[in-house]
Image 1 (cartoon, one colour):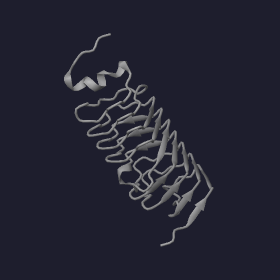
Image 2 (tube, rainbow, N blue to C red):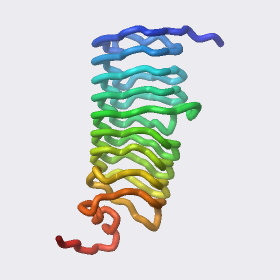
Image 3 (cartoon, rainbow, N blue to C red):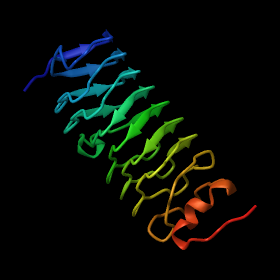
Image 4 (cartoon, one colour):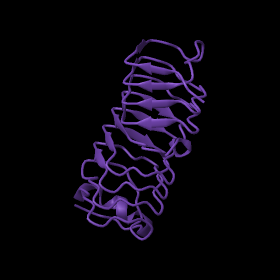
Length: 191
């Protein structure tokens, strides 16, 4: 099946809950101040697209392809990235607010999360090795059998990572956040 191709188009302040985004392949497109809340984006393909200040709350991304996509200042609540297409899956997240989203079993090597709130995000069994994690808040995020090898968490806060259940070899963590590795032992760390 041949899908329509949309190249270098700008979408500004479009509410896609009211105006359907045409199914197809979007290449090098810019989406600014758009609303995707609850929209079904299944089988869409986004390559080298930018999403700026968009709302993706509860958007269905089942089999959606994201290749070299940038999310900036976006709200991504309840987005199940673990259901999107894994083919060339790559994205950067900057100044985003994520809650209750999932990257379960996702390959996130060399991804970038900068200045993001990642509250209650599921990273179980994900590969975050060498992932760029800068100034992120991981309140109640789930790490279980997660590969964090060589990841830099030194500027991140509020994570709870069990070193017995996760791979953290050569990860960087600030001394202020060591409690996030020791929480299960109920140890009090004093300064």
